[in-house]
Amino acid sequence: MGRAEMRASKAPAASGHDGLLGPEAAMTGGSELAIAAAGLTKRYGKTAALCDVSLQARAGTVTALLGPNGAGKTTMVRILSTLLRPDAGTARVGGYDVTRDPERVRTRIGLAGQSLSVDGKLSGPENLAMFGRLHRLAWPVVRERSARLLDIFDLGGAGKKAVKTYSGGMRRKLDLALSLMAEPSILFLDEPTAGLDPASRHALWEIIRGLVGRGTTVLLTTQYLDEADALAGSIVFIDAGRVVAAGTPAELKEQAGQAQFDLIAATDADVVRLTAALGTLAVVTDQARRGVRVAVQGSGLDGIRELNAITGTAVQAGASIERFSLREPDLDDVYFQLTGHARPARAAGETA
Amino acid sequence: MTALPAGTRRQSAAWVASDYWEMAKRSLRHIRHDPEQLANVTLQPVLIVVVADFLLGGAINTGTHGSYINFVMPGILVVAAAFAAVTTTISVAADMLEGIIDRFRTLPMANAALIAGHFIADLARSLLGLAVTIAAGYAVGFRPAAGIGEWVMTVAVFLLVTLALSLLAALIGLLGKSVEVAQQLGAIIIIPIFFSSALVPAGTMPSWLRVVTANQPITQAVDTLRALLLNRPPGSHLWLTLTEFGGIIVAAFTLATILFKRTASI
Image (cartoon, rainbow over all chains, first blue to last red; front, side, top):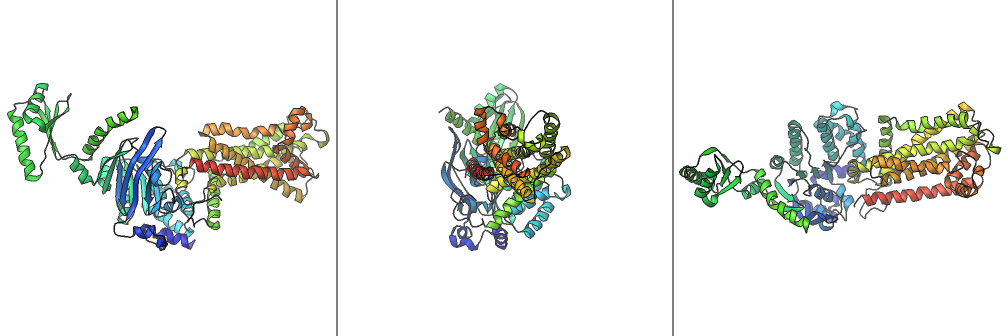
């Protein structure tokens, strides 16, 4: 018992005496990778759920796996958490290969999210105690952590009520609490805040930030761009099972271009006038609503000069303008840009 | 229990036992939240006892066995064990189809404990069924001739039969594509009881059916229980019961573990 307890409690630091075997010792080095996946491929029949996906996450960071429904996010998480065997590629989690050494990987990971569940017929504390014991934790540790997690997640009030009577938000919180019982060094969160109200979402974000602050590595899947922006240090965009972009939120936003000057013209003739005057700088974003977008390439004072030129040109064109706005790019732009480019490719792939 | 990948050092016997205990506790707690589970093993066998005694008792001549209730009680006990097992089918199927199975699979626990939890709860349910059924039997005139030793053997054989049926039920639960389908399939377990010496003496059946009846394990179990309760030498029935049900247990457990592993991708 004592041994299990020691092992579990040291998990967040991911250092260890069983480093004799190598992999864990490697993790304590300078550029330690908590997750290293290369060329992961998974097919269901003729459909490729994942195609040659690589991903690296340094220890103590949050990586967001972002993409539309059916992009392969959950498949990726299931492979990395030893639930699914990839058809090709390799993945090391916590220094161990997920297919060759799943048992060791399991002692280091926690998993929570959409596809996961809690035991609805047990109470919250019963769930925590059961999963704590199944994680091979000694009773005193189980009791102490259960009490602490119930406190952190504000679930103590539910007492002995069966979990099936919980609200969606409470269930999510318990789900996350369960995955934290063994203080995993690597945490997989599959759409952790899907369907939650804003208050619960922000509360969960705070908890996730706290965990990362204490050294936990988090891989998070989400469809919410603001969630990735708020939590993740690096983002991997996947669509139709392929990585379409990866980088820090700032890098990705940069990829989406600089600020954008949006104009709504009064008539179709005005759209023609505007695009003729602005030339290649302008794109028609929305024919029906007569939207014209001009990307501002420069930043700072250069950007302002450029904007000045753009507005001057628009005025000289004599077009009648209904509305205008200037906005910084956000991850939404990246999302639509990337998925917009990727979607025709997927359709072509399906017919092939 | 099953072959674990090399490098697994945490599967010490004490922790495996703890896994089994936790999973058993879980299933037992489910009974508390879902007490209807107990109706299966209490109300139904009692109903059968009443029907057997008052409706069929006068009509069925059991030859040398004396009153019909004395003859049929061992059969009803096996029916009670089968009813207890049906619950296992449903709860195994529910586990497999709900997300919770993934959480169990990401734990460093012994996989077989998941199924073990269900059958341990099943043994508890069927013990309750045994007590209630025998009490009901007594109330309508069941008068066994068993001594302490025979009673102990009776309970042991009963638990052996329950365990075997429970594992078969778990197997069916693993195959079910939905809880409803599993529930329908689970009823299969009851069928062999009708084609045995449980409810009527095999001697009254057509000869081709007698061949089936006499050679199937349920008949051996019922005949063993009958001999024990009426304090007659069980003879070969006891050994056949032990070997046949022992075989079923080993085969069903192995198969269930393989099925479980196959549905689990790693």
